[in-house]
Image 1 (cartoon, rainbow, N blue to C red):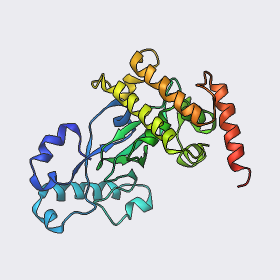
Image 2: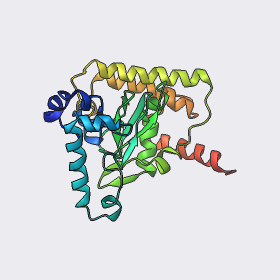
Image 3: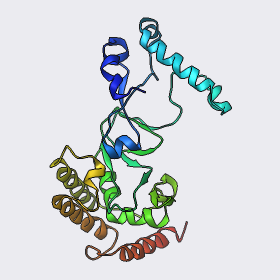
Image 4: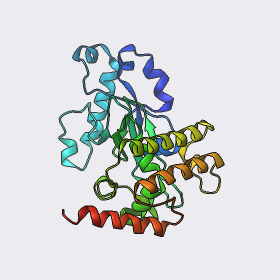
Length: 254
């Protein structure tokens, strides 16, 4: 890992600098903190021989893993590689925190640039057109997550198997899909009005920007209708009823 205090020093090594990538865990995602890593999956052997910094970092990882109580960690043969990584892609990624405060009206979802390394505390999926971002940002999705997902104390916990894979989104035609994508982009545009704010600040339930709330209202209208509602729904109970109707219909012949 490369902390903010180490970043400038690491970049002074031109060989090590080639392998520096942004690293996003749940803290970085929600609170806007900066952290980086040395991504050495395709490291050139000659680069290791030329960079004292890379050799020092690999030796440090080896020493720390040797102290682990877990046999699989102690015996992991690739000392220079991460063991618990959610996703890395050369395409845009949608990133969702594993855990989010139940006080938030919406799930703090992020669009991440290609090449970002995400930890196992962030769930990611390739999202080239922004459709997944829009769906995961909706009130419909966080209602499903609060209803069937896990809990960590009072916070809601995301699960790709229980929460995401079972989300009863029907097949959508391209015009409906595009309207949802466009509404999701308006959420991003509203957040861009205050680029200095972290996601935690954007989604403070007592201080959400009116422009962001309006963007979510427009997104919810599109997603609610795509799920089968005649108009934008107004309560969590209404969304729960529609979600379970869709789920029952989609699984009856499974």
